[in-house]
Image (tube, rainbow, N blue to C red; front, side, top):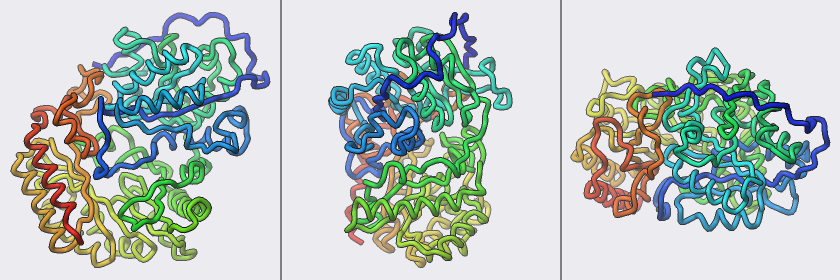
Length: 542
């Protein structure tokens, strides 16, 4: 059951430190993506980025201020010209990476630590915060955010932006601290849009020498752009923003701020950037098994400027690659759950921009099967502009076996499998490679998994497509007021140490401890067979 937490008594007199005082505390910040596994290393065969992209997104405004030498961030460790910005960011995978965090703390001596966490990362976030407290004591401000926080601290009514309607899921870190289930490790816990908020917190921190948590809580302006909640569990205070929308056209981009270091295999050796249309935090569909579904993350936003934002980021990618990797070509992957939310108008506008002023870049993005078949003219037009890779959430070949899918729009016309094959053929004819996400643990029989993988193996042998697979095992996420998760605190590691964990290093997201309701946990022997079939798929030389 979600808990409504009322703020404690008055904090007493407001801090005597003036907001107008000149900054006298240099910001030394590091940002980490908390580990999701208790041990081990991600398989090189898993389709995962080596960049902490969500952290980059959240911190891009602060990092841009540092690079532009503006405000308190100008004097931070992020603004030093002799240091690369990325050196202050760390993507962790398991506790075997803790030595990397320890080294980063020793070198940076941070006074601000940002931790990003998905649901399976919460045990890791606690471990990282404990290490930071041990090494730095209370000198460091520890700030927690990420998708897990968005799903566990929320408003019961988005129209009433007040602390009185803030709800805490059983797994809310703010609630866990108040109920003494975890130590008071986190000074600030952020739910929602954090880009401007993080920059503002840094500005306030630089003006507070004695008690930064209290000073920030007392002086943080709720007019700061974005729909956010800032929880201060150590002093039992919660702030809710007024909801002034972020102006996405004015935000710095990830690629423009952090550059390009990745290279996706599907783009034939080119350097690959992550770009975003910022049309929403999730998907336009509402599949029950998906943590990015519309009913949880909300609807499309600010679509009007999205094509221009993407076009500008493609140009920034080319510039970054020319500067840092002059002997490489440029590519980009659009990280939208669906490229430009599938809007025909927005896609047309992007094509017009690329046709009017073509760019030396190829790119990829995500569409559903039915969108590809319904928007053939637009997909062909995108292909002529540089679209070379489409990633599809195939999940299964039998949607009815798992209770259906919101994105299975044309299910009454033809089978999901038939439409998938038709979409593959269409993309191949337009020189577009296809990758597929597979999702197990939805209630399907193991024979169905075997049939799915054998079918994909046969397709690749016959047609050369799809070129890549990403296997995942469905995880029950908090999902705010979701009844199935209401008694779970998510403080156990998703998969204990052992043989199953070793196999799951090959997967994207996967867990033994948090299966969907009425679905059996994954069995080691079955996962082993899936790995064998994935290896067979990858061994096919096309």
